[in-house]
Image 1 (spheres, rainbow, N blue to C red):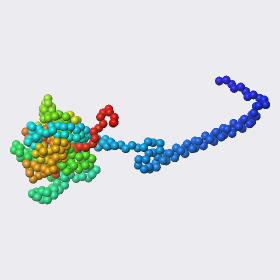
Image 2 (spheres, protein in one colour):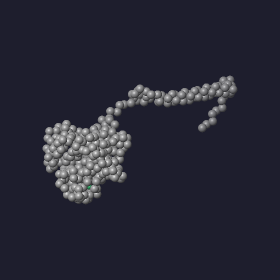
Image 3 (cartoon, helix red, strand yellow):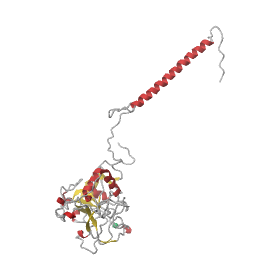
Image 4 (cartoon, rainbow, N blue to C red):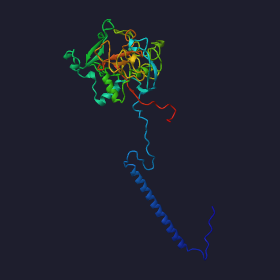
Length: 387
Ligand SMILES: [Ca+2]
């Protein structure tokens, strides 16, 4: 950098004092202007900051921001947590190999829905009870008007528990292995002496259809229709005998918690479980769903009628408008599906995806539970944006 030439001295040269005064004025003016600018900027920042906290009418754009856009997609992340989306489709419902009420085999179409990956567990049901204070039907004193044939002293809260008879019995005499146990309920599945200790991940049992419905409503869900349940259970396998294929124990492997031995007297529990198993103890089906066969029966929304398959709609059937069970004509019943740890080859074969069971909606049993579904839109395809 070169040194500037000295200022020329002569008739046109300015007085150094005048130059200094001029520079002082200019610099002073600049400094005051700078301070005013800083003050103005700080006041603006403060004013805008205060505006952030002023409530604006809904939908009003905030200063400096684009207006809020309405999100038309339903919120589903929380509601479907732990659920699996089952795409809609058409399948052959029922079976030619099963009981008469599984026929006629017909093509049924169901819309897509979300379903719980596993049966509702004891810890999940406990959250519901803790939050709502709900008392299950088995915990309430039965009303005499509803059970006119039962002596008053027998009208005590309780539920039926599986109790293997000492000797072999007629398999049509199911009352020989079911015992009404006072004090049995979901917290004490086998009676007052039993507890849920260590059973947190087991499916809740001793819940009747009404209990399941209340849970589903609390969870923002609903019970599956029978048609949805079977479509989900089949896991993409059309017409297979089991939810995993056509062989009960492929390669000798146990695929579900069912009953091995001589029903009802000798339970050899070769699959590792004499009663309920923690959910997910066996392989999932083709849709990733756990225990769609065995473990516990699962309540469906539908009333039960053995003749419903013949005349029902072929799209999203919701079940008949009333119930009829020829085994107990006077008792209205809801459908159960999936079988339980008490099902075996010689008795009910309930772990087949087409097997239909039925029970009074106020009846909880030690092998009855449920899972829920939700009707919401399908998830966005992986790797693709929304149009
Ligand atoms: Ca078992």
